[in-house]
Image (cartoon, rainbow, N blue to C red; front, side, top):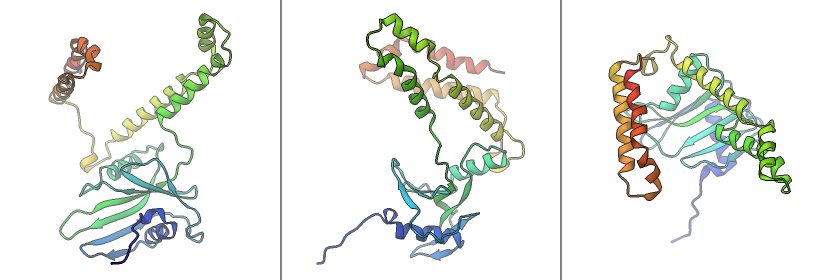
Amino acid sequence: GREQIVYDALADNDCSVLLWREMFDNRERPTAYARLRSEGRSLAPLDDGAASIRLVPGEQSNTSLSRGNEEFLKWVRRIDAGPSVELEMLEALKCGGFAHMACPMGGIDYLRPDQVPTRIAFLQEYLHNASEGWTLALTSLRDLYADAEEDPARTTSQLRAAVSTQGAAFTPESARLGEVTAEMHLALAWPGLTGTVAPTGITEATLNQWADVMTDELDRLLASSNPSIDPLRERRELLAQYFESLRAVT
């Protein structure tokens, strides 16, 4: 008969700091139905308590916390039982020598009897100045058109000329993104990787499967009655030809 307040413990810094202590001490604790196993590698001392922990806004399926400018904790809210694909990928990239990522520093696993451990929290290096590629592109576009917008008295041709001669194009950023992406693929192709992340060769059957899957996805999209994709319907054959060209790649 009493009122009770239920709130998200991750929004309480005094509660969140307990997670860091568990990982710092590499503890394992029993729960009602399983165990929680925490691990941490090269963590900063915890003398500052909860003062340096803050909730990172903007997540949807996860809740993220940062501690100072050192560590970033992602708590998974939509859990897939079994080995973590994300963790396997991070470890593979690290083993392959890929340096452009937040290195894994630990986390928390949920262990049920007779089941494979499930990672429910990831601890990584905190990259406080990291940006998404889309954010970089939008920033460059804003800079690109800033001069033109500040002088509305110009003619259309003058505005276009101002944009063309403006130096803040997205070209350098996109080139750098391409280089980093290439380095990532080379790391994943490293022959020293083993198990589920071991690189495998692309066969004729693989290429045919990719072409079939993409063509099928296109046709399922075009089966919609949404009129906004009518222009796409007109280009269906052209798009399908690009997919078909995969079959001839050697």
